Length: 379
Ligand code: GLN
Picture 1 (cartoon, rainbow, N blue to C red):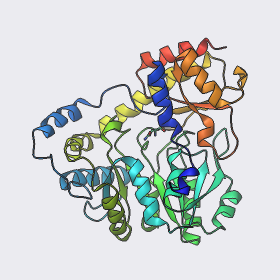
Picture 2: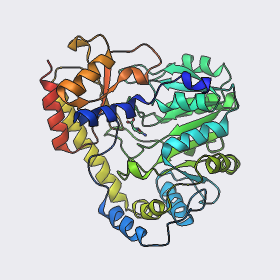
Picture 3: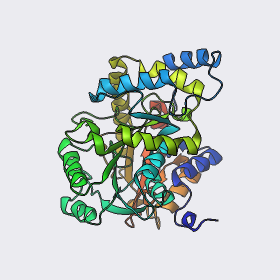
Picture 4: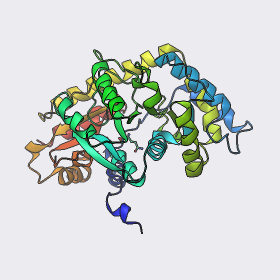
Protein backbone atom coordinates (compact mmCIF):
# COMPACT_ATOMS: atom_id res chain seq x y z
CA UNK A 1 0.00 0.00 0.00
CA UNK A 2 0.98 3.62 -0.51
CA UNK A 3 3.87 4.98 1.55
CA UNK A 4 2.06 8.25 2.25
CA UNK A 5 -0.46 6.30 4.36
CA UNK A 6 2.33 5.27 6.75
CA UNK A 7 2.85 8.89 7.74
CA UNK A 8 -0.39 9.33 9.68
CA UNK A 9 -2.56 7.15 11.90
CA UNK A 10 -6.24 6.34 11.83
CA UNK A 11 -8.38 9.12 13.28
CA UNK A 12 -7.96 9.07 17.06
CA UNK A 13 -11.28 10.95 17.42
CA UNK A 14 -13.31 8.33 15.56
CA UNK A 15 -11.31 5.56 17.29
CA UNK A 16 -12.30 6.93 20.71
CA UNK A 17 -15.98 6.80 19.73
CA UNK A 18 -15.62 3.12 18.88
CA UNK A 19 -13.84 2.50 22.21
CA UNK A 20 -16.55 4.43 24.09
CA UNK A 21 -19.27 2.31 22.45
CA UNK A 22 -17.40 -0.86 23.26
CA UNK A 23 -17.20 0.04 26.97
CA UNK A 24 -20.57 1.80 27.27
CA UNK A 25 -18.81 5.01 28.34
CA UNK A 26 -20.36 8.48 28.17
CA UNK A 27 -18.91 9.68 24.89
CA UNK A 28 -17.44 13.17 25.12
CA UNK A 29 -14.80 12.35 22.50
CA UNK A 30 -16.04 12.79 18.91
CA UNK A 31 -18.01 16.05 18.87
CA UNK A 32 -21.67 15.36 18.06
CA UNK A 33 -24.94 15.96 19.91
CA UNK A 34 -27.00 13.38 21.81
CA UNK A 35 -30.16 15.37 21.06
CA UNK A 36 -32.32 15.63 17.95
CA UNK A 37 -32.21 18.25 15.22
CA UNK A 38 -35.01 20.87 15.13
CA UNK A 39 -38.50 19.48 14.50
CA UNK A 40 -38.64 21.35 11.16
CA UNK A 41 -35.81 19.19 9.84
CA UNK A 42 -37.32 15.94 11.08
CA UNK A 43 -40.64 16.75 9.39
CA UNK A 44 -38.88 17.78 6.17
CA UNK A 45 -36.88 14.53 6.20
CA UNK A 46 -40.09 12.54 6.42
CA UNK A 47 -41.54 14.47 3.48
CA UNK A 48 -38.34 14.09 1.46
CA UNK A 49 -38.41 10.29 1.73
CA UNK A 50 -41.71 10.30 -0.20
CA UNK A 51 -40.55 12.80 -2.80
CA UNK A 52 -38.64 12.39 -6.06
CA UNK A 53 -35.20 12.53 -4.39
CA UNK A 54 -33.93 8.98 -4.61
CA UNK A 55 -31.49 9.39 -7.48
CA UNK A 56 -28.32 11.47 -7.83
CA UNK A 57 -28.67 15.15 -7.12
CA UNK A 58 -26.81 17.59 -9.40
CA UNK A 59 -23.14 16.89 -8.69
CA UNK A 60 -22.31 20.24 -7.09
CA UNK A 61 -25.55 20.34 -5.11
CA UNK A 62 -29.30 20.15 -5.69
CA UNK A 63 -30.46 23.56 -7.00
CA UNK A 64 -33.05 24.08 -4.25
CA UNK A 65 -30.49 23.29 -1.55
CA UNK A 66 -27.85 25.53 -3.13
CA UNK A 67 -30.32 28.43 -3.43
CA UNK A 68 -31.32 28.10 0.23
CA UNK A 69 -27.67 27.77 1.25
CA UNK A 70 -26.62 30.84 -0.73
CA UNK A 71 -29.44 32.86 0.88
CA UNK A 72 -28.43 31.70 4.36
CA UNK A 73 -24.77 32.60 3.75
CA UNK A 74 -25.76 36.02 2.37
CA UNK A 75 -27.90 36.59 5.48
CA UNK A 76 -25.04 36.00 7.92
CA UNK A 77 -21.88 37.00 6.06
CA UNK A 78 -23.21 39.82 3.90
CA UNK A 79 -21.30 38.32 0.95
CA UNK A 80 -23.20 38.32 -2.38
CA UNK A 81 -23.01 34.53 -2.71
CA UNK A 82 -24.51 33.11 -5.89
CA UNK A 83 -25.83 29.55 -5.85
CA UNK A 84 -24.43 28.74 -9.28
CA UNK A 85 -21.06 30.44 -9.08
CA UNK A 86 -19.74 30.19 -5.55
CA UNK A 87 -20.72 26.84 -4.03
CA UNK A 88 -19.98 23.14 -4.19
CA UNK A 89 -22.07 20.97 -1.87
CA UNK A 90 -19.96 18.22 -0.28
CA UNK A 91 -20.26 15.26 2.08
CA UNK A 92 -19.55 17.27 5.22
CA UNK A 93 -16.81 19.78 5.87
CA UNK A 94 -14.54 16.73 5.88
CA UNK A 95 -14.90 16.33 2.12
CA UNK A 96 -14.92 20.11 1.69
CA UNK A 97 -11.44 20.33 3.26
CA UNK A 98 -10.09 17.51 1.10
CA UNK A 99 -11.54 19.22 -1.99
CA UNK A 100 -10.07 22.58 -0.93
CA UNK A 101 -6.59 21.10 -0.48
CA UNK A 102 -6.64 19.15 -3.72
CA UNK A 103 -7.90 22.24 -5.52
CA UNK A 104 -5.25 24.55 -4.03
CA UNK A 105 -2.14 22.39 -3.90
CA UNK A 106 0.32 20.79 -6.24
CA UNK A 107 2.36 17.84 -4.96
CA UNK A 108 5.18 19.21 -2.80
CA UNK A 109 3.42 22.45 -1.89
CA UNK A 110 3.51 23.55 1.72
CA UNK A 111 0.40 24.29 3.78
CA UNK A 112 0.49 26.23 7.04
CA UNK A 113 -1.47 24.59 9.86
CA UNK A 114 -1.86 26.06 13.35
CA UNK A 115 -1.07 23.62 16.15
CA UNK A 116 -3.11 22.37 17.95
CA UNK A 117 -5.26 21.52 14.96
CA UNK A 118 -8.25 19.39 14.04
CA UNK A 119 -6.58 16.09 13.17
CA UNK A 120 -7.97 15.84 9.61
CA UNK A 121 -5.84 18.75 8.36
CA UNK A 122 -2.47 17.02 8.48
CA UNK A 123 -3.87 13.87 6.88
CA UNK A 124 -5.70 15.91 4.21
CA UNK A 125 -2.52 17.83 3.38
CA UNK A 126 -0.55 14.61 2.99
CA UNK A 127 -3.30 12.92 0.94
CA UNK A 128 -3.30 15.87 -1.43
CA UNK A 129 0.48 15.59 -1.81
CA UNK A 130 1.22 18.70 0.23
CA UNK A 131 3.43 19.12 3.25
CA UNK A 132 1.99 20.64 6.43
CA UNK A 133 4.15 23.19 8.25
CA UNK A 134 3.07 24.09 11.77
CA UNK A 135 2.74 27.34 13.69
CA UNK A 136 1.89 27.06 17.39
CA UNK A 137 -1.16 28.62 19.04
CA UNK A 138 -0.21 29.20 22.66
CA UNK A 139 -2.39 29.01 25.76
CA UNK A 140 -4.19 30.51 27.54
CA UNK A 141 -5.76 32.46 24.64
CA UNK A 142 -4.22 30.47 21.80
CA UNK A 143 -3.02 33.47 19.85
CA UNK A 144 -0.21 33.14 17.31
CA UNK A 145 3.11 34.93 17.24
CA UNK A 146 3.20 37.25 14.22
CA UNK A 147 6.92 36.69 13.64
CA UNK A 148 6.44 32.91 13.70
CA UNK A 149 3.63 33.13 11.19
CA UNK A 150 5.69 35.44 9.00
CA UNK A 151 8.55 32.91 9.11
CA UNK A 152 6.18 30.14 8.03
CA UNK A 153 5.02 32.25 5.07
CA UNK A 154 8.65 32.83 4.14
CA UNK A 155 8.67 29.11 3.22
CA UNK A 156 6.25 30.02 0.36
CA UNK A 157 3.23 27.92 1.36
CA UNK A 158 0.39 27.53 -1.12
CA UNK A 159 -2.24 27.86 1.62
CA UNK A 160 -2.95 28.32 5.30
CA UNK A 161 -5.76 26.55 7.14
CA UNK A 162 -7.74 28.56 9.67
CA UNK A 163 -10.31 26.73 11.78
CA UNK A 164 -12.58 29.42 13.17
CA UNK A 165 -14.02 28.99 15.79
CA UNK A 166 -11.23 26.60 16.42
CA UNK A 167 -11.32 22.93 17.26
CA UNK A 168 -9.86 21.91 19.75
CA UNK A 169 -8.83 25.23 21.38
CA UNK A 170 -12.16 27.08 21.18
CA UNK A 171 -10.28 30.11 19.89
CA UNK A 172 -12.31 32.65 17.94
CA UNK A 173 -10.02 34.60 15.59
CA UNK A 174 -10.40 38.37 15.85
CA UNK A 175 -10.83 40.64 12.85
CA UNK A 176 -7.27 41.93 13.38
CA UNK A 177 -5.80 38.42 13.45
CA UNK A 178 -7.66 37.47 10.28
CA UNK A 179 -6.55 40.67 8.56
CA UNK A 180 -2.95 39.90 9.50
CA UNK A 181 -3.24 36.35 8.12
CA UNK A 182 -4.83 37.72 4.94
CA UNK A 183 -2.11 40.32 4.47
CA UNK A 184 0.58 37.62 4.63
CA UNK A 185 -1.43 35.43 2.25
CA UNK A 186 -1.70 38.33 -0.15
CA UNK A 187 2.00 39.15 0.10
CA UNK A 188 2.92 35.52 -0.70
CA UNK A 189 -0.01 34.80 -3.02
CA UNK A 190 -1.37 31.96 -0.88
CA UNK A 191 -4.92 30.74 -0.33
CA UNK A 192 -6.62 31.09 3.04
CA UNK A 193 -8.63 27.93 3.58
CA UNK A 194 -11.10 28.37 6.42
CA UNK A 195 -13.05 25.69 8.26
CA UNK A 196 -16.07 27.24 9.98
CA UNK A 197 -18.57 24.59 11.12
CA UNK A 198 -18.90 26.27 14.55
CA UNK A 199 -19.66 29.75 13.14
CA UNK A 200 -22.92 29.92 15.13
CA UNK A 201 -21.47 28.57 18.39
CA UNK A 202 -19.69 31.57 19.89
CA UNK A 203 -19.79 32.71 23.52
CA UNK A 204 -20.42 36.09 25.05
CA UNK A 205 -17.80 38.72 24.34
CA UNK A 206 -16.72 37.07 21.07
CA UNK A 207 -17.90 37.47 17.51
CA UNK A 208 -17.49 35.21 14.50
CA UNK A 209 -15.85 37.14 11.66
CA UNK A 210 -16.24 35.69 8.15
CA UNK A 211 -12.71 35.89 6.78
CA UNK A 212 -13.98 35.78 3.18
CA UNK A 213 -16.00 38.95 3.78
CA UNK A 214 -12.99 41.04 4.85
CA UNK A 215 -11.69 43.62 2.34
CA UNK A 216 -9.91 41.98 -0.59
CA UNK A 217 -10.28 38.49 0.89
CA UNK A 218 -12.90 36.87 -1.31
CA UNK A 219 -10.68 35.86 -4.24
CA UNK A 220 -8.12 34.02 -2.13
CA UNK A 221 -10.35 32.51 0.54
CA UNK A 222 -11.72 28.98 0.24
CA UNK A 223 -14.38 28.44 2.88
CA UNK A 224 -15.14 24.93 4.08
CA UNK A 225 -18.25 24.58 6.13
CA UNK A 226 -20.88 22.15 7.31
CA UNK A 227 -24.49 21.98 8.44
CA UNK A 228 -23.58 19.31 11.01
CA UNK A 229 -23.11 21.45 14.07
CA UNK A 230 -25.52 24.27 13.27
CA UNK A 231 -28.52 21.96 12.85
CA UNK A 232 -27.33 18.95 14.92
CA UNK A 233 -27.18 16.66 11.86
CA UNK A 234 -23.62 15.29 11.87
CA UNK A 235 -24.87 12.02 10.37
CA UNK A 236 -26.39 13.71 7.33
CA UNK A 237 -22.92 14.55 6.04
CA UNK A 238 -23.78 17.88 4.43
CA UNK A 239 -21.13 20.50 3.89
CA UNK A 240 -19.89 22.87 1.25
CA UNK A 241 -17.00 24.73 -0.30
CA UNK A 242 -17.53 28.43 -0.94
CA UNK A 243 -15.06 30.34 -3.08
CA UNK A 244 -14.56 32.59 -6.09
CA UNK A 245 -15.93 31.24 -9.42
CA UNK A 246 -12.56 30.25 -10.89
CA UNK A 247 -11.69 28.23 -7.78
CA UNK A 248 -15.15 26.65 -7.69
CA UNK A 249 -14.83 25.58 -11.34
CA UNK A 250 -11.83 23.44 -10.34
CA UNK A 251 -13.22 22.34 -6.96
CA UNK A 252 -16.30 20.95 -8.72
CA UNK A 253 -14.07 18.54 -10.63
CA UNK A 254 -12.33 17.30 -7.50
CA UNK A 255 -15.66 16.83 -5.73
CA UNK A 256 -17.27 15.07 -8.68
CA UNK A 257 -14.54 12.49 -8.97
CA UNK A 258 -14.33 11.95 -5.21
CA UNK A 259 -18.01 11.46 -4.35
CA UNK A 260 -20.29 12.59 -7.25
CA UNK A 261 -22.54 14.23 -4.70
CA UNK A 262 -24.07 14.49 -1.26
CA UNK A 263 -27.23 12.49 -0.49
CA UNK A 264 -30.19 13.90 -2.43
CA UNK A 265 -33.02 13.33 0.10
CA UNK A 266 -30.92 14.89 2.86
CA UNK A 267 -30.16 17.98 0.77
CA UNK A 268 -33.89 18.38 0.17
CA UNK A 269 -34.72 17.98 3.87
CA UNK A 270 -31.93 20.31 5.04
CA UNK A 271 -33.52 23.24 3.18
CA UNK A 272 -35.89 23.43 6.18
CA UNK A 273 -32.87 24.15 8.40
CA UNK A 274 -31.40 26.79 6.10
CA UNK A 275 -34.75 28.60 6.10
CA UNK A 276 -35.05 28.77 9.90
CA UNK A 277 -35.42 32.35 11.19
CA UNK A 278 -32.68 34.30 12.95
CA UNK A 279 -34.23 33.42 16.31
CA UNK A 280 -33.11 29.80 15.80
CA UNK A 281 -29.47 30.86 15.84
CA UNK A 282 -29.96 32.96 18.96
CA UNK A 283 -31.50 29.89 20.57
CA UNK A 284 -28.56 27.73 19.49
CA UNK A 285 -26.06 30.15 21.04
CA UNK A 286 -28.03 30.24 24.27
CA UNK A 287 -28.31 26.46 24.32
CA UNK A 288 -24.54 26.04 24.02
CA UNK A 289 -23.81 28.85 26.47
CA UNK A 290 -25.91 26.96 29.01
CA UNK A 291 -24.20 23.64 28.22
CA UNK A 292 -20.82 25.27 28.60
CA UNK A 293 -21.85 26.66 31.98
CA UNK A 294 -23.04 23.27 33.21
CA UNK A 295 -19.94 21.49 31.96
CA UNK A 296 -17.46 24.05 33.23
CA UNK A 297 -19.12 24.04 36.63
CA UNK A 298 -18.91 20.25 36.72
CA UNK A 299 -15.27 20.28 35.67
CA UNK A 300 -14.43 22.72 38.46
CA UNK A 301 -15.44 20.08 40.97
CA UNK A 302 -12.69 17.81 39.58
CA UNK A 303 -10.03 20.35 40.58
CA UNK A 304 -8.26 19.83 37.24
CA UNK A 305 -7.32 22.92 35.19
CA UNK A 306 -9.02 23.31 31.80
CA UNK A 307 -9.30 25.72 28.86
CA UNK A 308 -12.20 28.15 28.59
CA UNK A 309 -13.46 28.17 24.97
CA UNK A 310 -14.50 31.37 23.19
CA UNK A 311 -16.45 29.34 20.64
CA UNK A 312 -17.16 25.76 19.46
CA UNK A 313 -17.85 23.12 22.12
CA UNK A 314 -14.54 21.67 23.26
CA UNK A 315 -12.59 21.93 26.51
CA UNK A 316 -9.07 20.64 27.04
CA UNK A 317 -8.48 19.34 30.55
CA UNK A 318 -5.00 19.16 32.09
CA UNK A 319 -4.69 15.66 33.53
CA UNK A 320 -1.10 15.99 34.83
CA UNK A 321 -2.33 15.61 38.43
CA UNK A 322 -3.75 12.14 37.72
CA UNK A 323 -0.24 10.72 37.48
CA UNK A 324 -0.41 8.82 34.19
CA UNK A 325 2.54 8.39 31.85
CA UNK A 326 0.67 10.23 29.09
CA UNK A 327 -2.71 11.33 27.74
CA UNK A 328 -3.31 8.12 25.78
CA UNK A 329 -2.90 5.97 28.89
CA UNK A 330 -5.13 8.36 30.86
CA UNK A 331 -7.83 8.43 28.14
CA UNK A 332 -7.95 4.64 27.93
CA UNK A 333 -8.23 4.38 31.70
CA UNK A 334 -11.02 6.98 31.78
CA UNK A 335 -13.05 5.07 29.20
CA UNK A 336 -12.59 1.68 30.80
CA UNK A 337 -12.56 2.47 34.53
CA UNK A 338 -14.44 5.75 34.86
CA UNK A 339 -16.86 5.51 31.95
CA UNK A 340 -16.08 8.83 30.26
CA UNK A 341 -14.48 9.11 26.82
CA UNK A 342 -12.38 12.07 25.68
CA UNK A 343 -9.72 12.45 23.00
CA UNK A 344 -6.01 12.37 23.92
CA UNK A 345 -4.76 15.91 23.35
CA UNK A 346 -1.57 14.67 21.67
CA UNK A 347 -3.56 13.83 18.53
CA UNK A 348 -4.15 17.57 17.98
CA UNK A 349 -0.62 18.82 18.58
CA UNK A 350 2.49 18.87 16.48
CA UNK A 351 4.49 19.57 19.63
CA UNK A 352 4.98 16.73 22.16
CA UNK A 353 2.03 17.74 24.37
CA UNK A 354 0.85 14.80 26.43
CA UNK A 355 -0.99 16.20 29.43
CA UNK A 356 -4.33 17.21 27.91
CA UNK A 357 -7.58 15.44 27.11
CA UNK A 358 -10.23 17.07 24.94
CA UNK A 359 -13.87 16.70 25.99
CA UNK A 360 -16.86 18.11 24.14
CA UNK A 361 -20.09 19.35 25.66
CA UNK A 362 -22.60 18.99 22.81
CA UNK A 363 -24.66 16.77 25.07
CA UNK A 364 -27.86 16.99 27.12
CA UNK A 365 -27.29 18.66 30.48
CA UNK A 366 -28.05 15.39 32.27
CA UNK A 367 -25.34 13.65 30.21
CA UNK A 368 -22.85 16.39 31.07
CA UNK A 369 -23.69 16.24 34.78
CA UNK A 370 -23.35 12.45 34.83
CA UNK A 371 -19.96 12.69 33.08
CA UNK A 372 -18.69 15.32 35.52
CA UNK A 373 -19.85 13.29 38.53
CA UNK A 374 -17.77 10.39 37.23
CA UNK A 375 -14.78 12.62 36.52
CA UNK A 376 -14.97 14.22 39.98
CA UNK A 377 -14.36 10.80 41.52
CA UNK A 378 -10.96 10.33 39.90
CA UNK A 379 -9.09 12.62 42.29
N1 GLN B 1 -15.31 17.70 14.53
C1 GLN B 1 -15.67 16.63 15.41
C2 GLN B 1 -14.60 16.41 16.45
O1 GLN B 1 -13.57 16.99 16.39
C3 GLN B 1 -15.87 15.33 14.71
C4 GLN B 1 -15.91 15.39 13.24
C5 GLN B 1 -15.73 14.05 12.66
O2 GLN B 1 -15.38 13.10 13.34
N2 GLN B 1 -15.94 14.00 11.39
O3 GLN B 1 -14.80 15.62 17.31
